[in-house]
Image 1 (tube, rainbow, N blue to C red):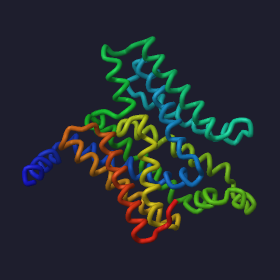
Image 2 (cartoon, rainbow, N blue to C red):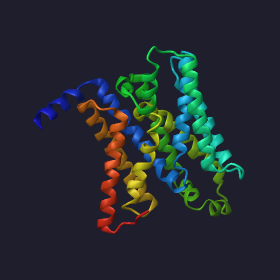
Image 3 (cartoon, rainbow, N blue to C red):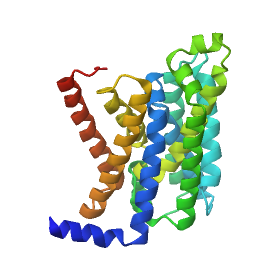
Length: 284
């Protein structure tokens, strides 16, 4: 035990480890804020759809040799979030069908582009790292950390400022429209902020595991608490603890970062489910 503590203290002295933990905690915090809203609106898999869009955009950016792929990935993902929202409201194409359509098409297109125009001699490993997360979280530059910090602060401020409106459109969109709330505008805000979070989370858990970062903390909190505010606060706390624990375990044991964080989230969900049964919390 003392050896593990000494090893951890040694790693914590390294700048790249501290940067990874800062970014990981911020991404987890932002993901959990909107996770409750997405789960309650039955739009949980928008994370999957947007993450696959981001993968396709990242593939194009890699082929184009862009030094900063976020300049392409972020706008494309935001536009896709808007299109998903608009298409999901179409009576001919329901929300889940729209997500599935864009998700599969983007993933296939991205992989096709990478195979037609390979930018690396080890394409399979690069694709696997992008899909399931990689050690890129441990190679963040100071500039990338500041970008993540600024965008995370913006996400938190937006959520706090529009908390009441987001709450209203989450539980009763029709009633909120009847009372004069521009529900479509706030749904669009949620979609855009979700897109930003997805792009930020790509380096942490990979495009295939992003939904877990959004969904698991919210579902875990719902095992115990009933109110929207309590669930949101619990979701944030759980997400931050799980991300921090997953990063530490990954660094100490050498396991994949993304998979380790999701495994910790899964364990937290099981514990919260058991706790919910024991204290008679609301079961979803």
